[in-house]
Image (cartoon, rainbow, N blue to C red; front, side):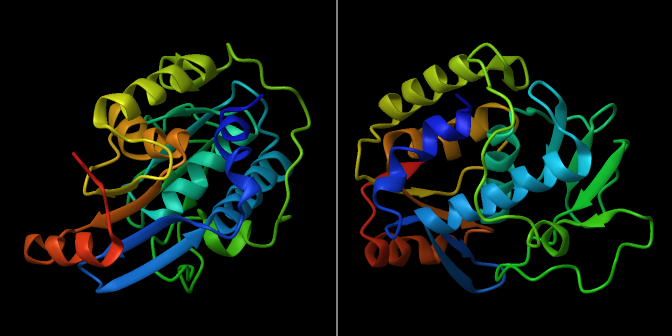
Length: 233
């Protein structure tokens, strides 16, 4: 079973509950995504990777993106089809990068990182693809075309089973329990930040309140408004 199946299947018993709330203090925006919405973006990403790029379990997919709700959809989609997520674009089947970032991958998908989910507005001049414009046309549900064994490489040097163990250990270390509301300003560095900042809350079934470009003066209000119970880092 894929890493994404392990993470999302228990959560989909309550598809309407909030899973990720993303504050972008630089843009002054707040976006709340339910379990179903996160799963929908992951499914679209997985379908796009399989249908357009023939990604199979173990294939390298580079994700060179900051902490963001769109990054969560990219990562979960890549893992759903069994991709091996790496940080280095060279040699990757597909690379997901932020606007203006370089890539040496076979194919490059530019992720707009718009708080409200808008694409780039115009196709990239270098022949790269607009991830949001392309992937949103893919199916809303995903059925893996091939099994994803637990020993499949998942994130840098770790396998699916190893990442699940690391995420559970990180959740326990940070005091993240089922139903917790986690406020995080953590960068999703590769691989430790992704494990601690994204996968630990997901594996515990917690609600992640992600604050990017955080304004320190607003964090107390964020905690109060979202009734958070755990801080990361």
